[in-house]
Image 1 (cartoon, chains in turn green, purple):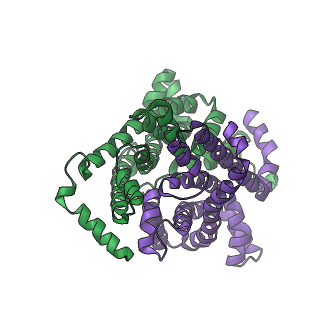
Image 2 (image 1 turned 90 degrees about the horizontal axis):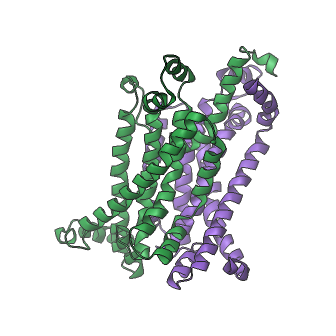
Image 3 (image 1 turned 60 degrees about the horizontal axis):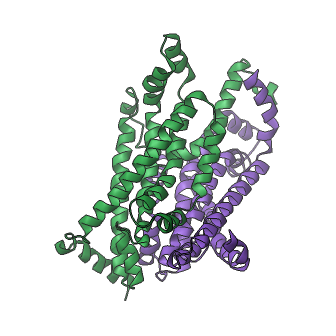
Length: 265
Length: 221
């Protein structure tokens, strides 16, 4: 069978109304998939955002963020999920834990670098007006960091929605059922239905969150013409490693009264 | 833990497959993304086009891409080549955005100085601009490497080899020991590769370390 006929069969499966209803229909699978995603994103945000805010504000434990983000990212989600099923049995706990661990790194990196990169002059101004540290964090730093926090949320959601597919391997639901069952019974058009639906879901969620990131830019900055839609991932994870030195250079320079390049070396 | 030490032969064989599937895409991705990124850096329209295409590619879930690719390229379903092509696409998608941004950050004074002492555009790119872009490239590569290693293990649910097979086998045989062995092996593999890339980055940018003692003094003092 040629690949293109797989695509035709997959599309005709998706565009058949009968396949959308019932407990194993597309609607139910999409809702299950969204449920895994939303619950996991919620719990990773619950852990990562306060932690990132605290470390970003105090500047203590930066090493913990960088190491923790790298270590968590290296943890294989599938292994954690299957181990979780063997330990706790089927249910919502294993996928939630596994996917939560996947969502923490981008959210932690985004929140931390968002808070840590707020202009120090702005923070000092707030402090000199007599704001308490809590109010500075919540009223000044968090709104300014919102675009980066939401970029982190966007990356986390994207990775979780993509990986929630593997829940089906542990006899759970979600759109992965089509993908994994289709391959198991060698009906590749069914696998393709799963692949296409997950891709569509990821693109829709990503578009919605890209809009949220754009809308969260404080002040009137977002109305300036040249700002394109924010891009995923590069905003936070790479920034975490590449931006920190750049800032250090800036402080070094202002501390030493702007030496000319020839003096430096 | 016992499983890990009683199956060292398997461990080695699976690690080789795992590394091949996750690292070949990184090399291919670098070969494609660096020239492409440098080429589109100064052309606004092309740059926007690559950025948009790259972010759409990045949004496609990996497991889905492994299955969809045979429709687009002449490979068989469940072929190893699908994984390599898919992960190469992700690598390119990430780096092709990082390269122009890294090049943007090179100071115009440095570029002017290079031009003034007689560098032609191509030599200037290779000898001045790209070396200065290395830190951002390395940051991107580390993310890609660790993500790829994790993605290859996910591929085992659709029959792709590598250390992920310990997860699927261990799950079917109800052996949590085997799954834990797999988690440890993949975790260690990711950390080792991540560290190696970081060290390579340091070796490639000796000037950053040369400047470091001074910088620390300035911050504390």
